[in-house]
Length: 431
Ligand code: ACO
Image (cartoon, rainbow, N blue to C red):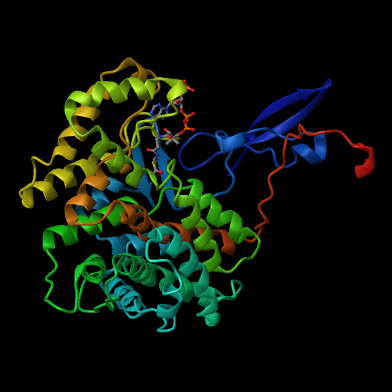
């Protein structure tokens, strides 16, 4: 990794410090500053980690300028067109595409773990009916550590594996239960005869009183949504999972931390916020008003579903998602959906606007996902939980990669202190 022939020189107070250059397999070179504090007694300052690589990873690569997303080297467009979510899970977790026997074995292992401990049903009932499903998921996933004691030892590779399979398998069940609880319907048990995506739709939309048949178009669209959200290298929630895991916390606690971070509107919560914004705009004639508001810094308003920290050309996931939206709405016969009309027109206008062009703001994955989920019958509050169940495999793959590292350290950033210098305590009588 280190290219000894290349290094950077930092001069501070007349003294030179050598910073080795690390060469990645793709992407920009990386200056190694690990010894800088010990040798030069200085920290580096990078709020938001805009220029800082916090780990080595071999899972996902993004080229933000080219609009390229690769999982273990494979482009997301090819995976979305030809693979399935479970096959992608295998690829992310183990590094290679499975052969038929490996995929069948992996599918069987995940499928056999989809039920949750029966006592967890009682745990759900402690939440208020109107709780946001993300709030319920943070609590219930964290509580899994109280139910699955035999997969908490992070130093045992077998237990790490079991915890991983359990989370990939049970998160859809938990999200569906959170949804059912919020609408006052009975929980639906998983059905092993269905596909991963089909089972999730069945757990959300079937009721004991009548038969429910999973629509294959929606099943495929759901599987694709899961794939498009499966991993995205060191984003905020994944970094949260890694940071939580770096202390040796159990895997269920780490994933609960990731879910909590994902909920924010600048991250996974954007899909809910985006559809709500499109509905608020309502008709295409109101778009200029919202474009003007987004450009006005004093409004505090941003076009949700636009912009990305890494993509500065286009988000390849959004391109696939847009095609999927057209396909799903066409097949459901609702291509004149007013929200889709607003979305398309908003995208068209924004992409011609100097403000958005100069700041390289393009629609991200969340811009179109909500339209598909809405057409499927999900309330907006379920959009981010669906993101969470899809991203679970990414969080776990990154967590496992970190734990397996021989030189893994607790994550502990430093700070630029701007508070008061040392001073003496003043007794309350003298203040
Ligand atoms: N609407 C209007 N202006 C925007 C938007 C937007 N959606 N996004 C960024 N900008 C502007 C900022 O005001 C800033 O302007 P300035 O340079 O004049 O101050 C500039 O573009 C850069 O924005 P930053 O916030 O510095 O960029 P950052 O990389 O930190 O943020 C983020 C990226 C959080 C995604 C941002 O674009 C945003 O808030 N978008 C809306 C929320 C959203 O869709 N999030 C989903 C992200 S994808 C995902 O998590 C799956």
